[in-house]
Length: 83
Image 1 (cartoon, rainbow, N blue to C red):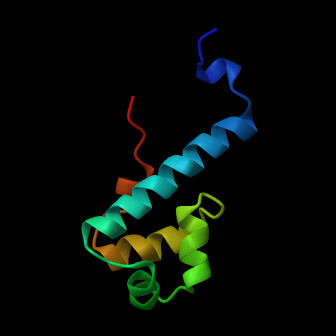
Image 2 (cartoon, one colour):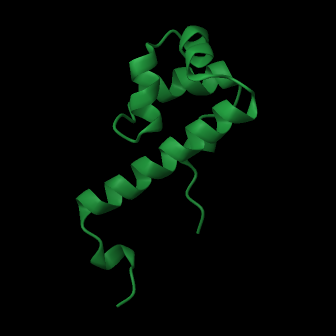
């Protein structure tokens, strides 16, 4: 059986997207040499909030905008879906 959007449930699809966003945020943070603590201070979020984003548990658009701004990358870098 192959995996396609038609045979993945909505919850599974959301988890895949969330994990992809989490990985992109972490990669962007590491690319600029920030620790989680550095990013938290720069964007005004708590360390636990950054951990939530990078673990895929939180993908709040408002928080992602703050993180993107702090890392000086477009928000679309976190959200772009590659086919």
